[in-house]
Amino acid sequence: MASVVTTTAPTRPAVPSAPGYPSAVVPAPGPGQGASGAPHRVVVLALDGVLPLDLGVPARVFNAATDEHGIPFYTLVTCSLGGRPVHTAEDFRLLVDHDETALATADTVVIATQEPSTHLLATGTLPPELAAALDLIRPDARVVSLCSSAFLLAAAGLLDGHRATTHWMLCDAFARLFPKIDVDPDVLFVDSGRILTSAGGAAGIDLCLHLVRRDHGAAVASAAARRVVVAPWREGGQAQFIEHPVPADADRSTSATRHWVLTRLAEPLTLKDLARHALMSERTFTRRFRAEVGTSPLQWLLQRRIDHARHLLETTELTVAAIATACGFGDPVALRKHFHTHLGLAPLAYRAAHRAPGLPAAAPA
Image (cartoon, rainbow, N blue to C red; front, side, top):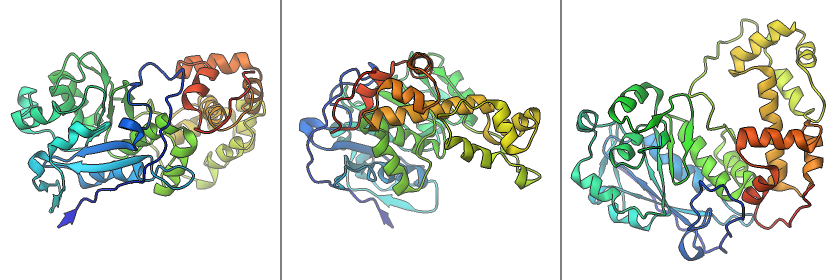
């Protein structure tokens, strides 16, 4: 029988809350730190019917997030109702070392994926023992649902008036059962500040990496992603699934052109430039690109420029003007416009919120 292992990290200095951090983020405790400057404590709740893969995601991602000395930013514990063995969705049970009282000690609570019960789907209410357990969560703690666990948060009233998501196959039932929630079936995850919800499968990895990035910046999140061997960043607003037909001719894929573009983001690239590199007409290139990537070439290019600008704002001392040039925006005005449109923040506000700890202040322009 498997046993979930508790990880304890050495004490590390507190990470101060950066000024200008988006108001949606809970200010206490500070981003990525727990009470009294201790490592941020993540408590994962495992319920009967839990999917083992999804249960392992939080520990796998958060344990991979460390500082430059290898000291973890997070500690992880797993709990169950009454500390009882958990019957998974597979043919085995899990033994855990903590009961639901661990929820009261959490800076972040993650509820792992399990199929919604017949009772929950019929009534939209929680069993008394589970409702009492969720009441133990501190008002300032972040709460994260993976996939179908959004039903539990909804039944507890935590999602009323908020935008949320769950697995796309469950979104219609979710919306009917909980009409006070703005259900979005077309995204990987939704960050509402204190409450975060994710879609199914690998979207839980994306959400956990998003929290690491939100807490400690892109460099730490990217390093954690490399240790876990997953893609470092997928936007929460990305579609839950995209049809990716295998090209009839692999040599006619747009992959090589995408790699080529990433080494030339500072250049004023056009659709004509991309199609010419791929040895296709603009119409054929656009059709193949959309089939493989799920968006248009120019929208994809814009997102890559924004991602690169975010990385430079977080990890370098370059001015906003220099970053605008390096990312192909041409001037700071265009960079500010796209940041406001896509992120709701000015570049300097984004830098203040996400700057890697320890970097000196950078020039504003």
